[in-house]
Each structure stands twice: as structure tokens, then as C-alpha cells.
Length: 89
Length: 89
Image 1 (cartoon, each protein chain N blue to C red):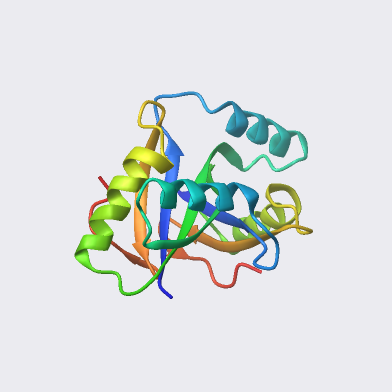
Image 2 (image 1 turned 90 degrees about the vertical axis):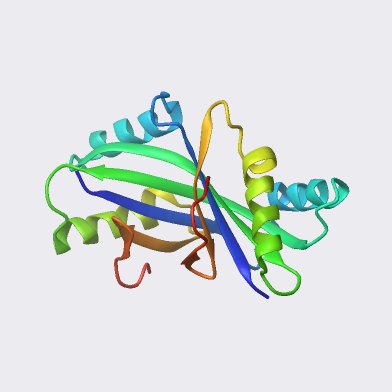
């Protein structure tokens, strides 16, 4: 069954406290090469049947309206079995 | 500055309650095409300087030991500016 991956990240202009804490922890542990860490979500959706244009449109809608909170997050990519599905937005 | 993306997912053999709840919600809302949803994490690490083999080795170590919990999670991919960085494990 095809798997669609939706990646959601906090908006660039917002602070990401989780990421900030991780950056601090990495640096304290001696991993000073890492300037910044941001943490988002990765959704793997298993689809019943073929991935048609209609299914992709539904995925886009679901990604924008249900899987992400558009006030604070952006859908950064949607891929089908590793292949980018056009523009995420 | 180069960005390295580390994707972490709950292990396939484990239940993913967050994903299960999302699958249920999608189906209740009429999006019945989605059989299953699993939710993982996406880390975007900004690196100071070039991404050498040494930096990649450090990223792999950090991904396995700090960013993921190997008891319940797998590092499923590591990419540098969109290009897969060899085997994640």
C-alpha cells in the first residue's frame, strides 16, 4: 500500500522552544557544530488503493486543515513513496 | 548554511496511540481513504560550515543516541539539503 509522508514544521518566524532546548543540550554535550535545531512532525499516511490526483488533493486538504495548525505551523512537504507531490501549499 | 534533516518514527512493531487517534479522527470526519497514520518527528539541524564525512558521522551518532530513543523509535532517514546521506543506521 502506498505511503504518503506529510512533513510539518513550526513557522520560521516563531520560536521553537523544544528545538532551542535540544540545541542547548547538544552544545552542552560537546556537539558544538550544530547552530540550531528545529523540531517538527512527520506523518506517514497509508492509503487504501492508488494515489490519484483526487487522493492527493484530499491529502493536501487534510494536511492543511487537520494535521497542521496553520497559525503556528507550515506543511513543508508532501511525498508519495519518496517522490515529492508537487507544491505542498 | 546547510540543513540536515533527521526523521525519527516509532518502531513498526509498536502501537502508535497518537497515530491511531489521528486515523480514527480522519475516518470519523469522512476521510476514509486513510488506512493508517503514524506520527514521528522531523529534526532540522543547521550546521555551521561544510557537511563533511566527519560531521555526518556526528549527526548519525547524535540521531541514534540523543534525538531518538532506540527502544521505541527508529531513525528512518538522514538527508543533507534534500539528498539522502547514505544509510541512516
